[in-house]
Image (tube, rainbow, N blue to C red):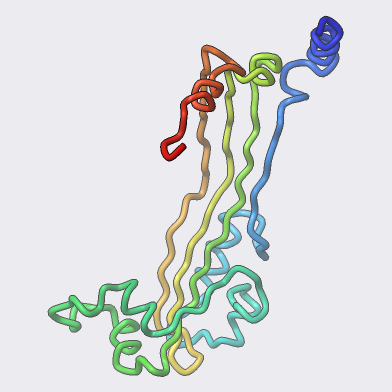
Length: 189
């Protein structure tokens, strides 16, 4: 046991605090490396002018790019709560056209993101689960495109250009913190 303690001390000394802490990265396969690039490609889409073939060049084709979901008219009705609308005249023109030709209307749902988690702080406190600090950075971009007869009739976007979050988790008992839940008898024994 004494040897393990020395090894851990040496690891902490040689690696320093931050170098030995875990990092993770989550990103969706995408033609864009930033929020700005995704938004610019979206801005190049012109309703009633941009065709499905144009979407291939802009990076919005589900047949060419991964992680773009195709929505049918039932998905769209649920998404826009179209069954509960009293008046459809107040809807944007593209939605009205989609409703009028629901069998010919399809939607593309784009969900692109790039998120990085980086733990920071004291290596030994993190390793022994006393204190874990995490910084999360990245971006996410979402878009919805409606097409009738392979022509975009409506577009909508949302997203977060800059994500920066901090998490600080403290366990006063460190590695013993989770033992209590393991010792509680489960019902049905």
